[in-house]
Image (tube, rainbow, N blue to C red; front, side, top):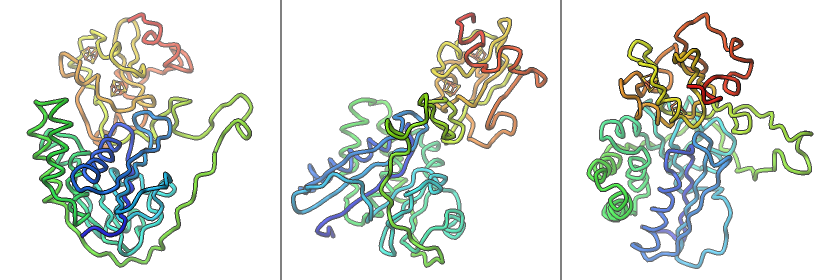
Length: 332
Ligand code: SF4
Ligand code: SF4
């Protein structure tokens, strides 16, 4: 049953498709449910791997504000680790439905992120997406409309058909399955925890024309200025199997971030500091020398560098390897 107004905040990462889900929810409200609806997103660097917030409002009356959703009725976390970031869990109360993509239990989830009392919905959305061959965001949409308690599944199916179906007809069946599985597998428990709810803090500009460091260098870890994405890249990474590599360099010409390190025509491995996890290299590799891996799955390619020759040092090709390497200089 719809209240006078209903507000949703989506906490996600660029590339997960949260913006699309916000738009679909807005469309469901305005087109299918006859309400006033609003949907917009705020990005950091507008780059894959960066945190993204999506906001959706439904109302029986005109919506005259265009501000972040500070006290959501429904909060969705596409990735558990986002909870560490400021404002992710802000503004929730005992009546907030919080939907989280996680394979942990209710209690483990709440303790891990210090979740205040709320109505917690959990599901392994990433696992379902892999199972269906669909997108994580569609699985989360299914879970979110179930958690809302008033958005009919048929309306979500309709908007998914009109968007995914129109753009990628061959992916429609798998995404509709993902939507239904997200809906059916999301489970809820009312959590009464010891953690205190925090108020939403309006963002102060961290660095701007009047307070930026001289030279404009952004010294904050994990950002697209220094191109160090290791702190915000989430989900999947490529895993390199050197034995299968034929050094064709297709990965190198495909990778938008010059992750691959070639020396004397040989693919030495990846400098994963710069990898944003787009997996284009996995798609292009003709010999399956690059495969999709979950972040944290392999010890030898997490966080920094996977190398063919473990003694190889990037100082051999320059301190700032990605600038001085053969890859960057188009020598491969
Ligand atoms: S595309 Fe695959 S086979 Fe070709 S160089 Fe890259 S990893 Fe090796
Ligand atoms: S996933 Fe592959 S193509 Fe994408 S940034 Fe990482 S190494 Fe480059």
